Structures are given as structure tokens and as C-alpha cells.
Image (cartoon, rainbow, N blue to C red; front, side, top):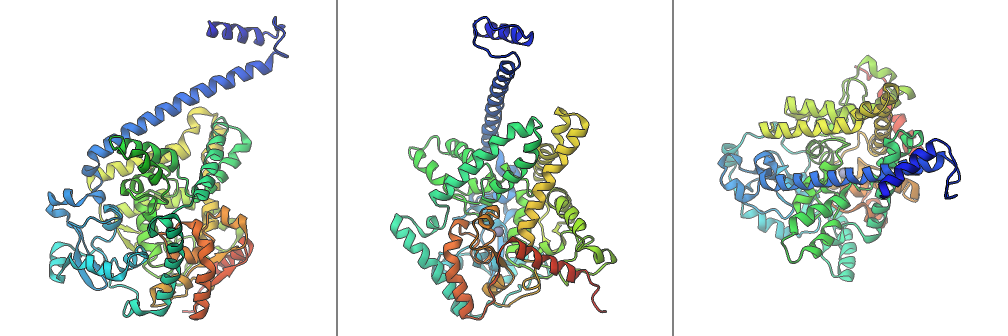
Length: 546
Ligand SMILES: [Zn+2]
């Protein structure tokens, strides 16, 4: 009955006749309202279908994931696969970690397979005592011969870069670790939680994340319906939301944990616990490694998460601004020269022109990082020719390519199915370009300035400090628009600490840097940081003397 009367109202309003009940003030407005409510119902159906598909996907991955995602093999699964040993080198000693139940999960530990894992080992265990780490590792030590018999090292040049001799007694490293440990010990004691839990997102951070997520998803219907205002608003909100680590994670992690713990009596506790962890790609989103592993796949707009591990975690974070080690120095050497290790070409002479910078920045993320670099890494088994990359198994390649296809559809193809061609072209290019410019603005100014680009130290901790630049540390806009990336020095020293804690840690770290004569690079805000980056880009455009 309701449906038929609604249909009558529609016809009635379209004809512009009088409302017999005297309720409707005019003909056009009620029609729009009815249409809008119908669109909302269909949106709800779409969301339900998407969540059902997602639920099914989670179940399938739970059941068959080990056959595809080799990097996620557990020690039990490795037992049946003698060809899948997990070996590495840390501080010059060799280890077979195939049977080790790594608390951070199998993916985190798989990143050091067949390579020197010292830098990752150092930066990802700030809260575990040295004695405990040594004791655990000693159970898995093997000889160099056994290591070489079990694998071919991924990179023959991988002889380490830092001087680790005496790092345990190094005063700078000790004071930094002591400062961070003291800070989190206070929080842990007050809240009755572990140090590791204390370093994650606070309730205030989660409130911010949920608010941003609501704003972003709220703009999506208007964006998809072709509203011009939201063509510009949605990508900026997508950036702010993503960089503050929403990654659609809250609602989807709830779904995942409901699936995962549905049979557990402690399910509610685990759900609350799980959604409070942060940033899966630094292995610190959740205490459950599976959440860290697959959640980033739900917001893969920066890059495939698997490639991001190689580009960002293994390459850039371990060796910032180190020639032939940091892939961020070699993203597009034909177009931009940001480091002395990149061979100068005549095309670099004009790299500091603003329209050239804007053009490169607008395609760097969508075409460069997400597609071209990805394809090259898989074809050449090396990310940007500097981070060695194990070839993927055939099922893993298929899964990877499918993931990239979904990315291309969601970012660039869907408008062509719903909009006229001219408008579809705009919707398929402008949002991606805006997201890319936001990404480049907030990442290039952190390491590529005259002060940082060629700085270095054989001391791992000093190197992390001198190759990074903070900006706008007293400015809330800088903090929120960069998602805390404006505390780059602190982030590089302690990548597993949630960004919401970095402002509080910063003064102490700055003081320790000053005490030990380590430069603490800081720009007052975006303008000064961008000016420093631009001056560097300009100086690198000049042909070096032969
Ligand atoms: Zn990072």
C-alpha cells in the first residue's frame, strides 16, 4: 500500500498539480526528496552486499590463505614445507627462524628472510630488553655455512651499512631508548597495560579517526553522484583520513574480529582490544598479526601493501637517504634527481620549474608508486633496483594482479560506467592527482632538503635523526594535515610508536640530540619546509662537475 501511494505521489508531483492534502508546497522538491531517499535505500543495499562479500572473502582467506600468501606461513605450516625455511642475519650472526613464533606475526619476520635484518630488528623492538632479545635469538642461531646452504642471499652487496659495534653501550642510543621507555612506562603503570599497548593509539586518537572516517564516507555519495564541490573535497578528506590511519580499518577490523573470535568467549574484549591497535604496515595496529596483515589491503591507494613493505619498511625506513639502499631516491630518476647518487641527465636541468614539479607530483602516487614501480619490482625482482625482492609464486602473482585491477577500477575506471565521457575523464584523473600531490607534499619535504638529503652517520640512531626533518611542530594544521608526519625524526627513530605520542616525546628527543651534537632539523611550517625542499631540487638540477 505504501509503495503504491508513493508512486501516485510521484506522478502527481511530476505533473505539477495541487497537493490534495495540502502538505506538499511545490511539485519539484518532494520529487527530489523521494528520489534521494530511494538512492539512500540502494546505498544501504550496496553496503550490505559489500560487507557480505567482505565477510566471505575473510572466510576464504582464513581457509586457503596459506596456499597463496607465502609470507604469512606460520611455523606449523613451514614444517611441511622444507623449501620454505626462514633464514636471516642479525648483527653478523645467522639464524633459522622457521620454527620461531614471532609475537609480531609471520609477515613481519618474513621481511628479513634472505637479507640482513639488523636495522629492522633494532628499530622494531624498542621495548624489549637486550638480554631478552639475545636469549630468544640464541635458540635459533645457525652457522654461516648452514645459512648459505639453505638460501641464496637476496643481495650480494648486503653487507650492512651501519657500524653496530658497541651500539648497546652507545650513550645516544641508550638515552633515546631510556627516554621513550620512561614515557611509556608511566602511561602503562597509570592505565595498567603493557608498554607495547601504551605506545598505540589513545582513545582521543581513535575519536579523531572515527570522526574523519565519518566525514570522508559522508562525502562519498555526493562524490560518486558527480557533485563538483566533492570532486575536490573528497580527495583531500581521503588524504587526511588515510594519513591519520583510518584505512577503513575501524568498521572492517570489527568485522574481521567478529569473524575471527566469533567462537571465543572473550570475543568482546578482543574486539575492543583489536580495534585500538594501529598502523598495520608498521606491525602495530593489532596484537593479532592477521589484522595487521590484511587491513592495509582495504585501503591500497598508496601502493600494494606487499610492495609498501619493501619500499617503505625494508628500504626507506632502514636506510633513509642511503645511496643504492633507499628506494625513495630512485622513484623516477629519468624525471627527477633528488640525490647525488642519481646520474645527472639534461632533462634534470628543468626539474625545479613549478609546473614540472606539479606534473610529476600529480602522477607520482597513482601511476608511479601504485602501478609502474609495482610492475617493475615484480618483473625485475628488485624494488627500484635497490631493494631485493623475492619472486612471487604463481598464485600470489594472480592475487597481486587482481588486487591491482581492483585498485585501477576503484580509482580510475568506475566513472566511465556512470558518467558522460568528458566528466568521467575528469573524475578518473583529478581525485587521484590531488591525492598524489597531498602525498608528495607531505613526504618529500621530510627527507629531501639540503640539510638532510646527503647527511649520514655510521651510528644507526644518529643516521635516522640527521636524515629527517620535522616541520610545524607547534602548528595543529601541520600535525593533522600530515597525520603526524611532521614529527619525522621521532617516527624514524621509533616507527612502532603511534603518531599521537610523538609530540610528547619530541622535546626530550630534541634535548638528547642537542646534548650529543646531533642536528635536529626543523622547519617552522609547510612554507619553510617546501622552500627548503625546492632549494634542494634546484641545486640538484645543476650538472655536477666531472
Ligand atoms: Zn613510516
